[in-house]
Amino acid sequence: MRIAVCDDEKVMRDTIAQRIQRFYPSYQIVKYERGEQLLEDPEENDLIFLDIQMEGMDGIETAKQLRKHNSQAVLVFLTAWEEYVFQAFDVDAFHYLVKPLKKEKFYQVLEAAVNRVKENILFQGKGEEKRSIVIKTGGTSRKIIVDEIIYVEVRNRKLTLYTWKDKIEFYGKLSELERKLGEDFIRPHRSYLIHFRYVQKYCAAEITLEDGTVILLAKQRYGEFVKQYLKYLKRSEGER
Image (cartoon, rainbow, N blue to C red):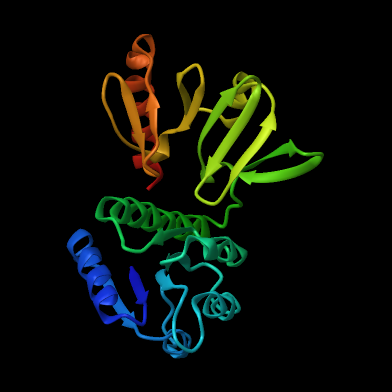
């Protein structure tokens, strides 16, 4: 896998590169000081950490140009100003990190982004279209890729669906959504439906997801959760 770091601050470039190398020593890491350098490189990168505020061409414009010839690259934006983040998702950004970078959050996003690259490669190899569902929100029908759903929360019949990019609210029944989404999801608590793919760790009382969310695990559902999670891991191994 080839991972790029594009930031006009040398300290930031080196810090991110070192952290990636520590976590994934076998991956190729390339560093760019400017967006123009990234675009001029004929080699395509699988994952790109891209600063938004840079001298010359900024990160948003760099990403727009990049998408013209590399639509599959997974983009993680870096920014010191969170208000710029909404522009990032216009170019299909996977996630963003706010400077100064918190080490734990960085590694969470890094691992999730690497997994997304692997998924993209897998789907390309199979030539399959990603499974999706359609939900109605605010009078509009919206298609959601199932594998991008991290978890769903219910409060007073209002469902809130979370992906890395969006927080989507709509009305419905969590039980009906659970049946629609299938065996890769489980309800560890009556108020939550989670995707096994994004489970980072768990104990008898709670589950921590890759985006840092902590979900309550009902005592009476612990045994079933462990059983179904092990089945999910076995299925996932069989697909690789």
